[in-house]
Image (cartoon, rainbow, N blue to C red):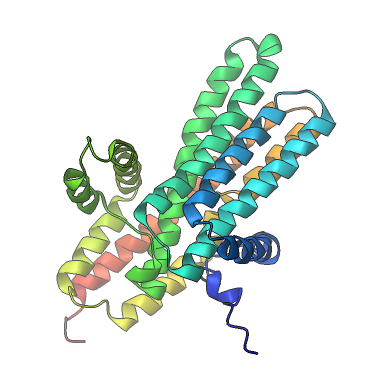
Length: 306
């Protein structure tokens, strides 16, 4: 009897963009969850929604100054992230990709960390007064930029590595056109999600002006198909930055969070975000913008027929 179940490798985005912890821990677990949920007829979006509830529950556990309860919260956050892996793997496994699914997937992490931030704020507020709220708000702002730019650069890399069908790169112009077609009356929640996603995407574009110029020049000069030389050379330059996109996503910040909780100094997590992760963010954006600026110059100099 032939086993027709998809392989683990077929559910990954690409080896270029996968992190060590994901490849050897979260993706294998997510793969098992995806196979299980596929048999039950559960959709990727339903898995994402489940991950939101589990992740929020994890955050609530961090309110308590008790290592055992915090360990339960750590387990729950790992569980939530395994579902976050499973929803994408199931979507690739079954072809159930959707823009709503991408929006929900991005929103899930926001729900987790809002819960985590609030739990830490209320836990420390009696000693810190409202200074801890100010620290959390600043950290949360930069967290959104770190995760947003990491996701953006990863999808730019996938665009030139695998093509538009395998990348989730969007632009605000196209999103606005889709937004106008959605009815507030018939689909109010979809409309609201789309509005927030447009705002999110415009923020990514503002932080990457040289990338936007490069994409514009590339589409004008090669409207039909991106030339192979560009795809190959861009991958070579972009690949070293993928480790920063991974560190600015989940695993590195989660490890820092878990350590800060277990040593009973949760405020250290905010300091880690504002220092170590922001240094990575600035370096990643600077390097990527420099790469795009050089490619724009090369594209403008390159004869179209070469």
